[in-house]
Length: 121
Image (cartoon, rainbow, N blue to C red):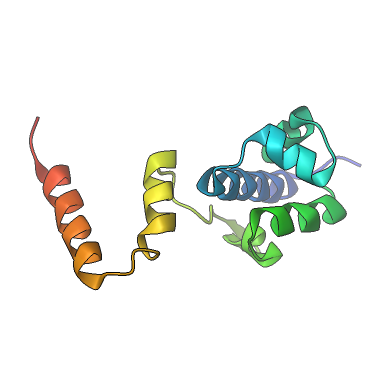
């Protein structure tokens, strides 16, 4: 049986979400593979093609995210990415921003980033 385009889109979205959570977590494909008992080449396949349910659960556990988060952005009849297509650096900033204890420091960082983004080159 051939896979439909909708099935392929769902698999691609899950794979993209795995890659984004892995990048945010700072975990290499090799480290994630070692943690769930597969090669880094298999992780590459998971991120670009599809993953079994049991490995999906292990992957979510290793990445410290809810397994449902890996399905974020998937709607019946409408597939979107859970994360906008931002750089790895932007995702790391976002992932760590709320860990900054001081509200004043968070506000200052937000102002700095906004000021830098509006500067003309």
